[in-house]
Length: 366
Image 1 (spheres, rainbow, N blue to C red):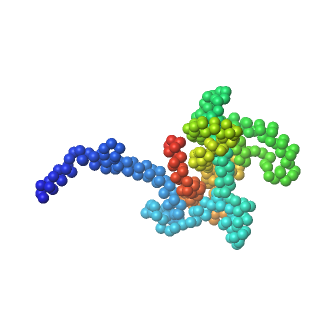
Image 2: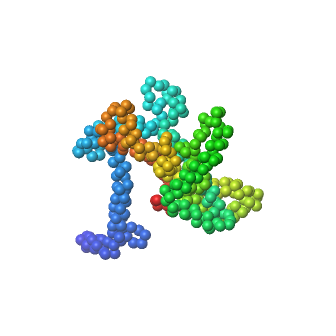
Image 3: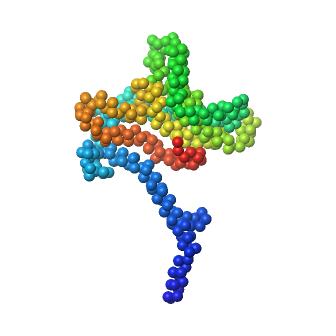
């Protein structure tokens, strides 16, 4: 028995076995490799998750907990007042939801009358993401399947639109919009819409509306549209030409080939592109601030004005304690948490397709 035990110990101390256990062989990973991978993953997760967890923790803290050095993560008293103040300043939810003395029916009807900035933001960003997805798909299809003059030049220009910083093209864009507004839109509005019910539906000016962003999205100039075009271009290039040739022999038009064959084959990619466009537009506070001088409903954009809006409201609406409120980081973290909450909910439901799309497209981050 002793001899057998000695043989077992010797076999475990074999350098080849030790190397296999700690370093692994071939594609298999040993303990040491796995340990390094997990340390790196935990470290990277900590870097990304620490601000998010800290923000959530502070959102539920009362002012006494925030100034207490002994309170780091878990508040002594669960406090929801921060969210009430954040909702009041950013006007996130419909006012009828938080008004007192209303019936359920009145609250629902109030939602249609004033949906609040959350639903307005979802509506605006959803429209922009839809337009960007459709235009990017059609552009990618054209580059992948058609030969036309100066094709390489126009493809190069698509790349250029991504390389050039957005602030550099802001002034020319403003000049284009001003020309369209003064010479095209205002005369049409005055002659057709002014003085009738259509005048209440359309605005006389195109600034302070969503029209400028939709206009540039239609012409492929939305936020990061070049990336979306390249995603569709790569996937459409991988589809065999024999499929659309067979469809054309059966009499299908280019539009039918595009929708019936190409779009239906890349539905998961369409979903991912829409999600990308939605997230990028949700976080695009720059464009919203450029085209909206006032009345911008985008929550992310209004978040940048939280202090000034709070200061103007604090005199009558938040109890008049402006100095304390401006020092209370709980209000700001609650507002930040509410502003990204829609994206977190979308990610929870769409994370599988989102990750699959990132793996297929090869996108690893901006």
